[in-house]
Length: 163
Image 1 (cartoon, rainbow, N blue to C red):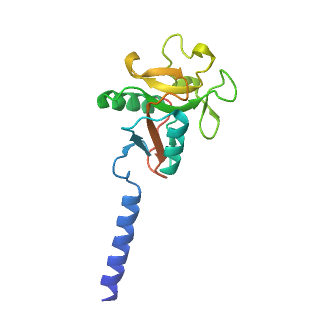
Image 2 (tube, one colour):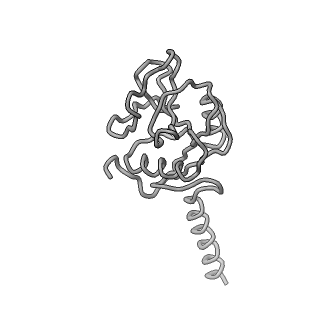
Image 3 (tube, rainbow, N blue to C red):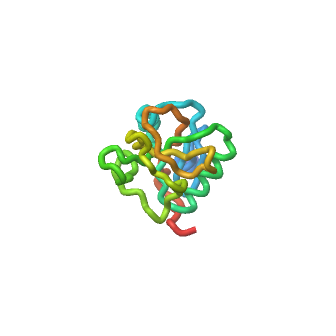
């Protein structure tokens, strides 16, 4: 009887650990991270707040494989532009990922030619630009767009910047 109880308890613990490494309903998994592709539109600031409420951040692209996966996934959704976590709010032309202010890795960027351009002097937030094959663009942070939240699963395969 004790062996059966121990087996059931250990089995339940193992099942809990496995399910803890899965993405929640509505989130998509890739390389040890979970992503939520919104179906609503918000300003960059509100999107960042919404992602934080959900336990994540606006997406920070750190690898070529992540970049390609995110672009391909957004393309299939047909929802238009998507906010990412990149911004140069504090220091013009110094692009960092929100909220940790880590520099955007120049080896893993995909700016559309001529971007970022800070058009009219008020484009400080980064998005995937649907009409330009989901390359990156800088836009006014107050524009309402779809957004992508990201959470780290805590373990598993982590991708590198190389493909």
